[in-house]
Image (cartoon, rainbow, N blue to C red; front, top):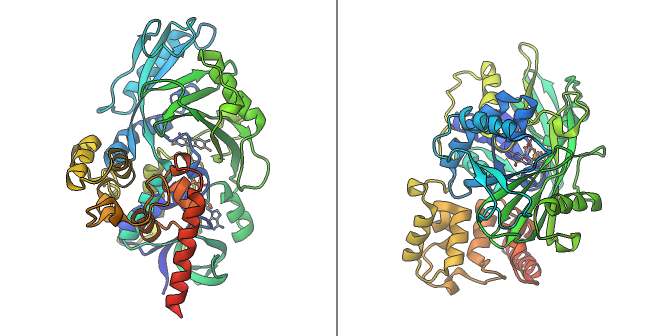
Length: 504
Ligand SMILES: Cc1cc2nc3c(=O)[nH]c(=O)nc-3n(C[C@H](O)[C@H](O)[C@H](O)COP(=O)(O)OP(=O)(O)OC[C@H]3O[C@@H](n4cnc5c(N)ncnc54)[C@H](O)[C@@H]3O)c2cc1C
C-alpha cells in the first residue's frame, strides 16, 4: 500500500512538515538517519526571534513572518519557549543610535507584537544591566525575543505527528528513490539491523538540511539548479558571567553580532560564529580560532575577561542556507526556498532549502500549500495555535504549574519539579505516574535522572543512547556528576539484554 508522504530528515523542518501533514489526515512516514535533531536543529542559538540584524539586509518578509511566529510558538509550547529580554550596549563608532532606534521601531511594529514588551532606550551607567559591562559603556537599548529548547521542539513535533498517525523512524537512512507508475519507490535502511525497506509514496519531501543537495543530486539524481551554502556556527558555554535573566547582544567591529545568554541556570551561552563549511556535511566541532573570537567578543564589552580555559562545553552546527550567491557568509539570506519538482502526472518531490527554527511551522504550512494540488480533499492549515505535547499549561503559567505539581507530588525536590515541568509540561504525569516517593521513580543514575524518566524518553521520545538523553532530550550532560554517563549506559545495556532474553 502506498503512503501519502515520505519525509526525509528528522530536524525541525522534517518533523514540522510531518506533523502538519499527519494532522491533515495524510499517511506519513518520516525517516531520520540518526537521532531526532541530531544535527543543525540541536545546534542553534535557541532563539525564537525576528532576527533584528536581518533588517540591515532588508529581509523584511522573513523578519515579519518570524516576528508573527514568535508569539504563536510561545503560546503553543510555554514549557520550552519563554520570553527573553535583550540588552544592546551602545558603543560610539559602531552602529549609530538613530539606526538602532529605527531598527527597534520596525522590530516592535512589523509583526503584531502583543505579549512581549516593547523596546526601550537604557541608561546603563549605574544600573543592574550595566553592572557587568565596562564603565565606558553608558547607554544601550532593550528589546524582547524568545528562548526555545531547540531539540525538544523537534521531538515534540515528532510526538504530535506520531499521535496523529505518522510513522517516525529514527536511525533509518534514506538511500534512493525513483518514480515508478506515478509513485515514488524509496529505499530506506534500518541502521540497527541493516534491513532495507521499500516505501511506496505519492509524495516525497526532502528536508535533509545540510544534506538536501546531496539527496537531490546523488541519491535521487535530480538537478534542481538550487543549492545550499553550508556555514558553520559555534557556541561556547562558560560558568555564569553575570546575574539576571537577560541576554546581551554584542556588536563586533566586523559588524557581526554575538549573544551572551543565561543558560541552564548556572551557565552563560555565547555565540555564534559564521565560518564557510567546505567539507561534506557531518559532525562539526569548534576551532581554536572560533573560541578565541567568542572570548574576544565578550572581553571587548564585559569587565570580566574570558579565556578559552573558562569554556565548560561547546557545540557547533552547520547552517543549510539557501545559496543566494552572496559573498559574505553573515549576509547570506536566512529565508527559505521550497523547490517543487515534478511535471504534471508525476509524483512530486519538494525540497527545503534554508529556514530557521523560528519559521518552521509556517514553512511546513507553505510546504503543504505547494503540495496541495497533489492532495485530493486537501484540508486547511490547522497548526496555528495548536499546542504541542505538554504545552497545555493553564494560562501558560509555568511557575504556577510547578507549584501545582509540588502539591500533587509532595516528595519532589523543587529543582527536580521545575526541571521536569520545563521538559515535559503537562506530560510530566506520564513520567511520574502514580509514584508517591522518589524511590518509586526507580534507580537514579545521577543528578536526578531516574529510571521512570529514562523509560519515558525511551518509549515516548525515541531516545536510544546516553547521548540522546543527556544532550538532546535534556541538557543534563552539563549538570550530572561524573560517572552518570557510564551508569546510564549500563542501565541501557541492561535493558537491551533483558529484552533480548525475553525475546528468546
Ligand atoms: C549556529 C547556528 C545558530 C542558529 N540559531 C538559530 C536561532 O537562534 N533561531 C532560529 O530560528 N534558527 C537558528 N538557526 C537555524 C536553524 O537551526 C536551522 O535552520 C534548522 O535547525 C534547520 O533544520 P533542518 O530540519 O532543515 O535541518 P537539520 O536539523 O540538520 O535536519 C536535517 C536532518 O536530515 C537528516 N538526514 C540527512 N540525510 C539523510 C538521509 N539520507 N536519510 C535520513 N535522514 C537524513 C539529518 O540527519 C538531519 O537530522 C541556527 C543555525 C545554526 C547552525
